[in-house]
Amino acid sequence: MLDQRLLPRQEIYRRYRDHHEVAEAIRAMVIRGAPAIGVAAAMGIALGALNATAAADEEFDAHFERVCNEMAAARPTAVNLFWAIDRMQGVYRNARPGGIGAVCAALIQEAVRMHAEDIEANRAMGRHGQVLIPDGARVLTHCNAGALATAGYGTALGVIRAAVEAGKRVEVYADETRPFLQGARLTAWELQKDGIPVTVITDGMAGHFMQAGRIDCVIVGADRIAANGDVANKIGTYSVAVLAKENRIPFYVAAPTSTFDLSMPDGSHIPIEERGAEEVRRIQGIPITSDDTQVANPAFDVTPNRYVSAIIAERGIARQPYLGNLRAMRSANSE
Ligand code: MRU
Image (cartoon, rainbow, N blue to C red; front, side, top):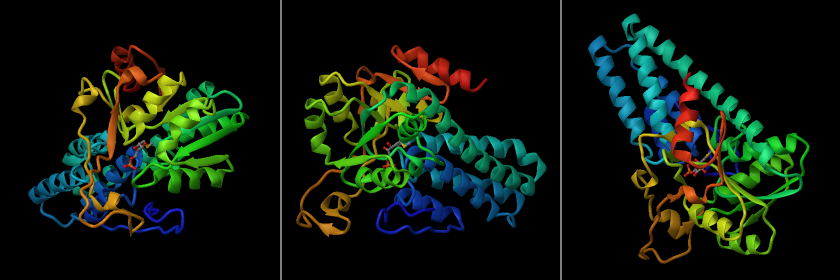
């Protein structure tokens, strides 16, 4: 894994050999972004099974359950993690009668397949979504929903990439995204590598740029989308969505159907991760408050569906009423 905590200053790849290490890498945000977390968890689960091939048959089932539970405890908000675990558990059940060797081979194959499918989903989202981006658009994004947050290409940044590949001129404004700085450190790094013009602004500047007529649309990713189209995404997304509506700017969400959680009727049920105080008290290790300053650090917020102009998925573009339209899109996906 490319260690995303160190970007853009250092590009260091880490090798993990067991599922404990993978779960810890997800928790510590060595890897982050909903689809990337899902694929990493699937690979971690395959590693966990492989490392227990010497176990007795009954012990293997209990071991596999522990592996899945440990992975599920890594982070709570991105539903792709739980979607990936469910999928690996299904593969496990089907392959189990063939013995431990068959289970391991099937789990590895499935994790590799999920990696490839995610890239394909991002490309499809790009094809659908790029029609929403006009030539010459100035696009605001929040957090990082790029190649780093997925198996490759990206969701929100995938749509931007596809617009550029279609010959459009696109300029990106990237919110810095306090406290982990995904926008400043990761989105800017990715877009610069691709030669796509990007300007980093601090989170508090977004409204000013919108009011000044300098933003044409907003596009973000998602960590979990409820059945009614409420969207959980990186903390600060809700403020951006409200500002976009106030300024009559379309607000788009790009996310694969693996990010839909249709078991949740609305966003109020989505668990919001609260991360450690040190992420807010320090920037890249440098204290910005006194050590005993009380801080809060919710990592995500929920944007009500009324602010969402469209949801771009690998099957196409959904609009209001999301209740029904998302369900139709998800079931078309499993045909
Ligand atoms: O805490 P993070 O960095 O994992 O949060 C990531 C986001 O909120 C992304 O916008 C979301 O996962 C979509 S990534 C394609």
